Amino acid sequence: MAHCASCHGRNLEGQPEWKAQDKDGILPAPPHDESGHTWPHPDTLLFRITKLGVAEAANLKDYKTRMPAFGGILTDAEIIAALSYIKSRWPDDMLRKRRPATAGRRRPRAQPGTHALA
Image 1 (tube, rainbow, N blue to C red):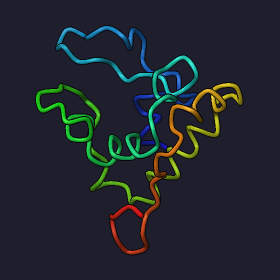
Image 2 (cartoon, one colour; image 1 turned 135 degrees about the horizontal axis):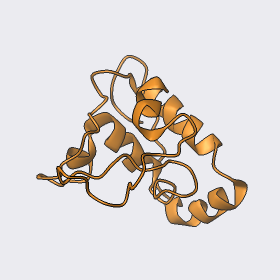
Image 3 (cartoon, rainbow, N blue to C red; image 1 turned 180 degrees about the vertical axis):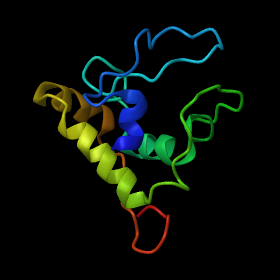
């Protein structure tokens, strides 16, 4: 979680003014608590963003961000653990709202010894 907390905060609070681009045209790290926009996204997208980076995961070729792709830093299991921790901090009402938005979408599972999803 140290990688995440260095930008997104120890309490998932994100960086100040996260909705406005900074002087370099880059959005600061958003919160991953209930005040942010992480919770409606499906698990598979959150996994891909963390592993591949925002630009590749969301197919946004020219997207500028300071968030690196963590695929070469964290294992799939570590990414899933980090995302599980983030989700464990969301209030029950947020999780209930999230279920319809993510219903029917696969949850990422790391396959032992690979970087492939089940």
